[in-house]
Length: 170
Image 1 (spheres, rainbow, N blue to C red):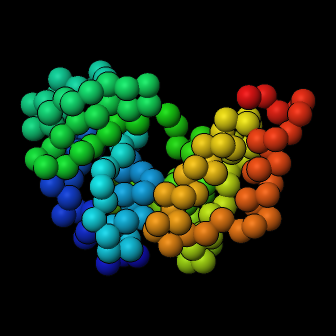
Image 2 (image 1 turned 90 degrees about the horizontal axis):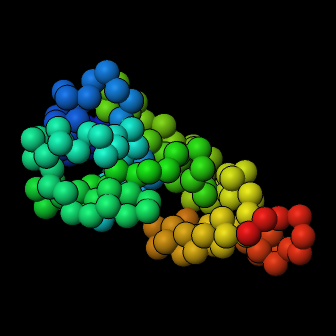
């Protein structure tokens, strides 16, 4: 994976983040990390570790504000869509979604089993509520387009969580 780090260093906004937030934990996360590792161009770039309070500084670095939604602040950098996610990575649906690139030390973290086998592994968070299980089932379609599969046993487990009466909150 060492040779893949260069792909992250070539991102147009890499230098701006690396130099201006070197004492802050900023990560590129999720599908963009997987796309870069698998030699695909990401449709967008999700960042964790930056927030609305960083917006003025980001604008001076060339980021353009697009919108603020419930889940993210969307920006443009050159022709790229960059989202400052409001959630935390530990609450993502699948272990592969928790993949991250750390701008401070260029470390890449990925669930090796999921990445190598192309199998979706739900996080414990995915079973916290019916709505989270439904979201995970929806996200499995997105990952299927990238070649990842949801084993039948896991699919049925999520489906059971969705249809469970009682115990699970919605």
